[in-house]
Length: 327
Image (cartoon, rainbow, N blue to C red; front, side, top):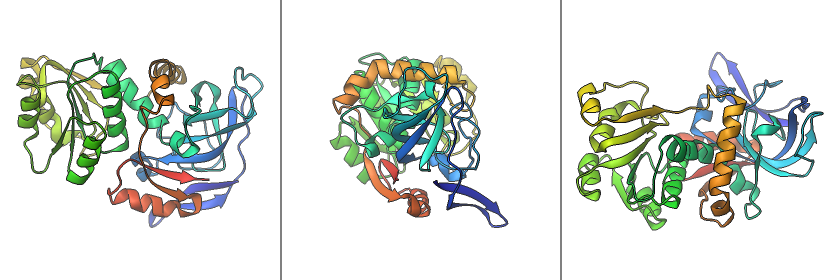
């Protein structure tokens, strides 16, 4: 089968589309015929196995973290899944004609979704339902600040927050054009973090209270800004660290505001924990998904043979929404 394989040599890591053996399912696994796969910023590091609990050992270092397609084969102990089922999943080896995954990690594809739309959903929606609803404990009427709202996961955060009745939903970006697009799609307030005072604008939008919930994709540089923008007894959920892994923290401010600071990742979660995240997400938002209320915009679609171009496009940070690889 075709697959985008990570090659490491003296020049560093790069991708090559090569022929590799088709995977064989284990007892609890299925093989999915991949129709489309979503590209994620984590892919840029080309660290195969980034989500250690979300897949299984690969015969070759195939890149890609999420995919959508049809079940082609099922393992001997798999139940509740059959060949032909339309599924999507977060798992290793997505950029290939076939992917292997534990059947407990499969997500049903809404009948209203195309393959390309389905390929955008698993990572962003699983991450942000867990961050906003489960760990963020969002209640209707609370205010939300999404730091880095124009990323794929950031858009998912704002859409889920709106769906759950948050008001206002505020997002930051360094692009006025991207923010304008999201405001047309329902974002209450977009703040350009390069030109605006984020804390001041958040306080103005919340009547001086601050944001009840901060969803942060930026990390190190905005640790204290997040706390300044948060309400007393606010919650900050650390999802991504696109701006840096480390930063100084004002512990006095943290204590004065009695802030809950919560970290989330899939890298240390077991299959059972991820299965629970999927179950909670599907039960909560799948009717809205099927009705088209929660969809991520597709920026561009590349063929598997053009995957290097897809990575180059992602590195420019010019995209809004998801980049999709079509098989």
